[in-house]
Image 1 (cartoon, helix red, strand yellow):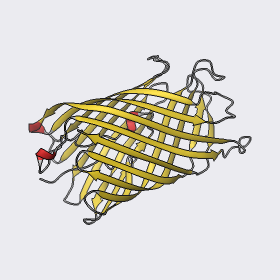
Image 2 (spheres, rainbow, N blue to C red):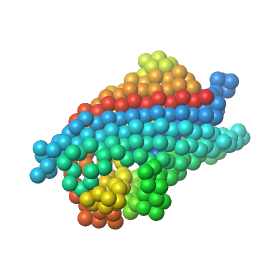
Image 3 (cartoon, rainbow, N blue to C red):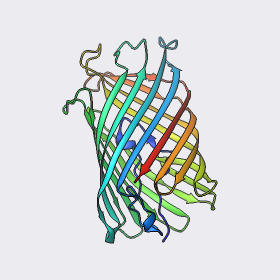
Length: 308
């Protein structure tokens, strides 16, 4: 039986401070049905990711001589705790630590630059519906410096299905929901992936996987991909804008080199350029927003996944 694979580690919605964009696989940590079950890893999974965006100027009157940089680091530990073999259905839980740094020396609204977040994850994978693979994730994201569930917690929900249309094409349909801290957004997941031949694969699934992949051999591949950055946080209570909110949204085009020692070890390094994003700052009720457009700039990043 052929191996089914949704996850393409080079191109994911990245807003790594929000586990909405943590990588979720259709096999939920190695529980996918494969030709050689003895080669499956155990139920445990460790992930590490980082992205660093270089300092860029603001495209806004009065701020054009100022610069801002952005970086994000995260680590996740998880375990599959239930697997129903007859339905190829699995449940898993995990915890993520995420560190975000927003450096803007002349920031008139808040001086805080480091943001720490702990996320608690519940994941689901199911193949019980004919021709469909469904995956879902619920994430509860808590500010690790405040631990205030009323004001410093937000939530992310993913429901994402893949339909096996034919031997070369799969259709994707789903929804991504962000809520909490008075910052609510809904994204549809829609698109397809198409295997051109044994070397080339096109992924056109907005907004989670837009990429053209070239498979060099069974372990090594390269990709030209689009990456999305989406972070939202609340600042401390003693800032100039007490308990103010900010969101950092950006996108970029990148080249990535991927390695996969199936099925236990995966990793990639990538380098690219942002397309010009937006920093939005608002008060504690998400009102009176200020928008700061960002110029395009280079970024680098990497990811590592170990299943055992």
